[in-house]
Image (tube, rainbow, N blue to C red; front, side, top):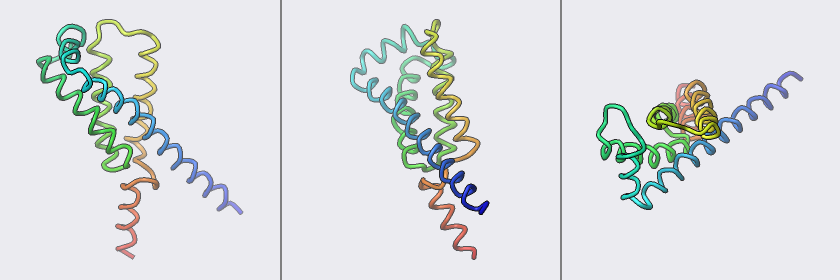
Length: 143
């Protein structure tokens, strides 16, 4: 009888991890696509608005945009999830630190994404992912 609630809890945990991956991926992927749409404006923003520490503005623009385009794809697939979550956490923190002023609503968004990314770092992608599928294959090979 206790197996049914435990199974339901596992299914809900996997669903929550999937939804977290998809939500965060959507946010960062759309941000990366908007940067690509008008690269000149993106460069101007990194030159004038975003003050990324330690990096020249053009390099920061390239690295930030690449991270926002590539890492969300990994999250969607649930492939190298902890790596993708760590990379997007860096992008997220740098985004907050590089703005001189950030609106309270925008800060709340970044805090939510940071919390979801932390959950993915700690828990991984869950069973409904390439990582979960590969882990199942590995466990099955040893038995």
